[in-house]
Amino acid sequence: MALNASRPWLITYDIADKRRLSRLHRFIKKHAVPVQYSVFLFEGSGAQVGRLMNEIEGYIDPKYDDVRAYQLPVESELVTLGRGSLPESLTLTSARNPLLDSLIHARQT
Image (cartoon, rainbow, N blue to C red; front, side, top):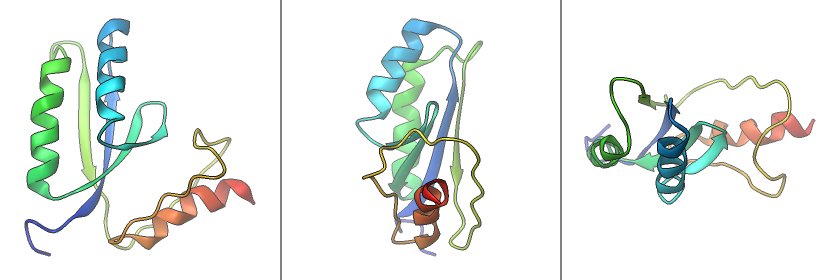
């Protein structure tokens, strides 16, 4: 896969301070789709996720907070339990990983 190819990423965070948490949440939801409370789906190249992480760095305190970006494989299996945080009318899909759609459909069955 080319370095500049768009791919799905999970951005996750654990922020210790409520104020930093609110600021980061407002910022990241402008760039990625919320999947769970502290988990977002981002579509972009490695360079784009790198730029996003550089921007996120200004919102956190690295002594207390943790932010991670996980590249999702093209072929992946999703298993979910419990209620989801996305509205039922919203479906996550990815050009690189069509199985992301099952994240929503699994909770509807």
